[in-house]
Picture 1 (cartoon, rainbow, N blue to C red):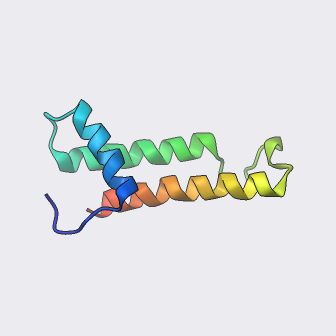
Picture 2: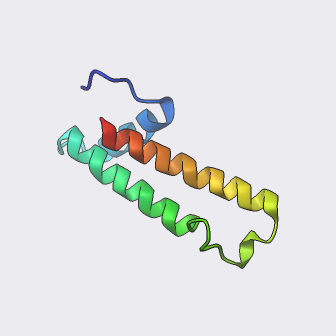
Amino acid sequence: MTDKQLSPAAQAVLDAAYREMDYAPRRHLQWVTAAALRAVADQVVPEEGKECECFTNEAIRLNRMGVRAEFRAIATELEAQ
C-alpha cells in the first residue's frame, strides 16, 4: 500500500479495478485505471473549445465540464500514487 491516502472517489475506482484484476500489481492497475478515466473524460466531454452542439445551454456545459474535471482529477490522483 502507499503512504498517501486516496480520496474516497479514487479509492472506490481503484478498489473496483482491483476486484476484477487482483492478480495484477496494484501500481499497474493505478496507471491503467487512470488512463481509462482520461479516455472516458475525453469521449464523454470534449475539451474546452472542442464542444459539440450539445453545449448550447451554459448550465449543462458547466456541469459537463465539472464531470470532466472530476474524472481527470481522479486519474491524476491515481497516477501520483
